[in-house]
Length: 316
Image 1: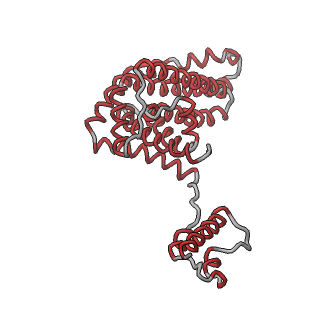
Image 2 (image 1 turned 90 degrees about the vertical axis):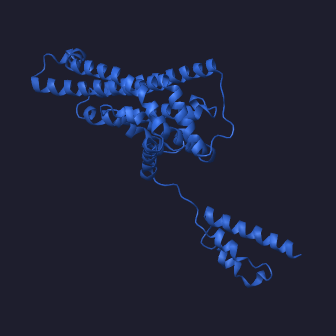
Image 3 (image 1 turned 90 degrees about the horizontal axis):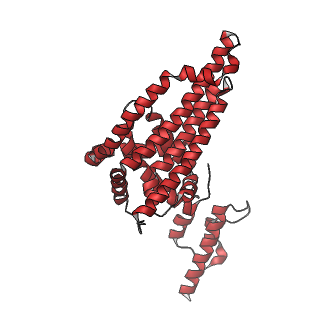
């Protein structure tokens, strides 16, 4: 009889706690009121339920807090240069090779920006010099933003492809430190390669679409000069996060759509990792140091996103 009463007391405690967490009406009894009610008699609540059940429901941190949580993931990746310098140095070699090639391309583009802006705005040839200069400056900025978005994305894709064995080792090192993967998915080489190429092409199409939007928006004076860099950083950060977390997601059998859905459960943290990485890539040779660290951060992001995808709905 005592055991039955104890189980009944537990059920009542859980019910009252559920009411408190979900949000009971002002007249609903609190846990303490129910526990101390004189009519309960032998169904008195043990103190342990008062301690467990009266805790407030956990609230999701606000966007800025989650964004800086993503920045901290990149910082955790950078700390691997201290804890595992050898494997990080191996990851820096492919980034150094690709950086040398891309720097040459950026220098070539910079030398022809004025000519490209003029070719894109032949209608402005007859305008007064002040108006023509403003319009072509906006177009120049738009061309530069669109080109940099494509450069950064393709730089990441090419670097990850060239240094795949090194970056996969970095990703696995992070996974092992955080507890490993219960059932890692091992795809045959050609199937994995085909899936990787398909996912890469999908993201490349998205990148080109965003670049086109940035280019068109750049024709709008003032708006193009202020909005284009912001849109470029946001889009570039998101696309980078997709690529940097690829190794960890693929080890769990996630395809392109599943990866995007998982990252969408916490866009703030995803952008917190992606945007700073995107901006750091503009610093000469910074990508050499940041690239392996960003892969480590992307692995941590993927682990967090997989848990989030299982427990939350997509949110901003």
